[in-house]
Length: 300
Image (tube, rainbow, N blue to C red; front, side):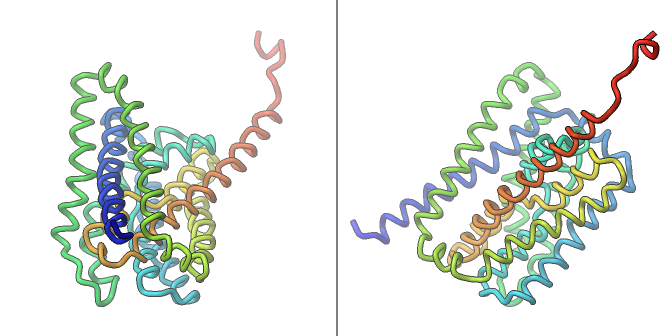
């Protein structure tokens, strides 16, 4: 058995892991939530509009500028553009929790950004990636089948059998986490040569610079409340690896650089954003510790 045959087998495992990871992450989110939990935080139209502008206008502009300033090979640049329009990552609530952000707002915003991504990405990507042949209908279908339908079914199950949904949500979430690890490991093994090329290029620098900039943009647009600002920053910065890998698998299967860059950017993003979340949580804890304790007379 030659190496090419082994790689083909590894890629089959990788693509199956991609499908399972995306479907399970959406299902876990749906089983953990109610429609009311998703909708209530989105009544603040000002924040919603700012979040949409940040994720789907400002972030793509930042990506375009970075690709222009740090010339990348075509596959790497395409991955950056895909990430720029892929928002609503399932990791956002976890990042928000780590940063002591508003949990309800993080959940509602995640679902909103995810739904917009599913419908916007197939429409705009063919115009953004020059020379690439992207079947918008195939892409839309893949995102709807892998993301929107599992989410919708899970929300329906939650509305009918709440106890069952709450019981199974963590288990399905663990399956998603395990398959994400398998996905990363198998793609890195299959594309080891391409990964080495990434490490020796400006692509890593692009990823490292990309996340702090777009986090800061979201954070500033979040207003004056720290718990809202942190969620806006995380939601703007954490891009949707699931949507990105789905796009790469459907449209760039013959271009390994795209998938490798998406995986690399996803890993770099999580490291940077969990680091920022830790700093925000420490700052929030410091503020809480400095708050004066109520006096006995005040209690009375």
